[in-house]
Length: 49
Image (tube, rainbow, N blue to C red):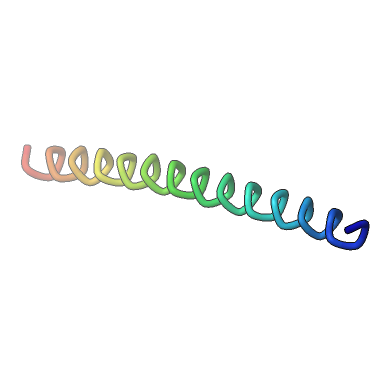
Protein backbone atom coordinates (compact mmCIF):
# COMPACT_ATOMS: atom_id res chain seq x y z
CA UNK A 1 0.00 0.00 0.00
CA UNK A 2 2.70 2.63 0.78
CA UNK A 3 4.08 2.11 -2.73
CA UNK A 4 0.62 2.30 -4.28
CA UNK A 5 -0.41 5.59 -2.69
CA UNK A 6 2.15 8.01 -4.26
CA UNK A 7 1.68 6.62 -7.75
CA UNK A 8 -2.09 6.96 -7.36
CA UNK A 9 -1.68 10.62 -6.37
CA UNK A 10 0.70 11.16 -9.26
CA UNK A 11 -1.85 9.67 -11.64
CA UNK A 12 -4.59 11.94 -10.27
CA UNK A 13 -2.39 15.04 -10.52
CA UNK A 14 -1.22 14.19 -14.02
CA UNK A 15 -4.73 13.46 -15.27
CA UNK A 16 -6.12 16.70 -13.80
CA UNK A 17 -3.28 18.77 -15.25
CA UNK A 18 -3.77 17.16 -18.65
CA UNK A 19 -7.48 17.90 -18.53
CA UNK A 20 -6.84 21.50 -17.50
CA UNK A 21 -4.28 22.00 -20.26
CA UNK A 22 -6.67 20.44 -22.77
CA UNK A 23 -9.56 22.70 -21.76
CA UNK A 24 -7.34 25.80 -21.71
CA UNK A 25 -5.97 24.97 -25.15
CA UNK A 26 -9.50 24.48 -26.50
CA UNK A 27 -10.60 27.82 -25.04
CA UNK A 28 -7.58 29.59 -26.52
CA UNK A 29 -8.19 27.89 -29.86
CA UNK A 30 -11.80 29.05 -29.89
CA UNK A 31 -10.75 32.61 -29.01
CA UNK A 32 -8.13 32.63 -31.76
CA UNK A 33 -10.60 31.17 -34.22
CA UNK A 34 -13.17 33.85 -33.40
CA UNK A 35 -10.53 36.55 -33.66
CA UNK A 36 -9.41 35.30 -37.06
CA UNK A 37 -13.01 35.15 -38.22
CA UNK A 38 -13.52 38.75 -37.11
CA UNK A 39 -10.35 39.83 -38.88
CA UNK A 40 -11.39 38.01 -42.03
CA UNK A 41 -14.82 39.63 -41.94
CA UNK A 42 -13.27 43.05 -41.40
CA UNK A 43 -10.83 42.55 -44.26
CA UNK A 44 -13.62 41.32 -46.47
CA UNK A 45 -15.80 44.31 -45.63
CA UNK A 46 -12.93 46.72 -46.18
CA UNK A 47 -12.12 45.08 -49.48
CA UNK A 48 -15.77 45.06 -50.53
CA UNK A 49 -16.24 48.77 -49.79
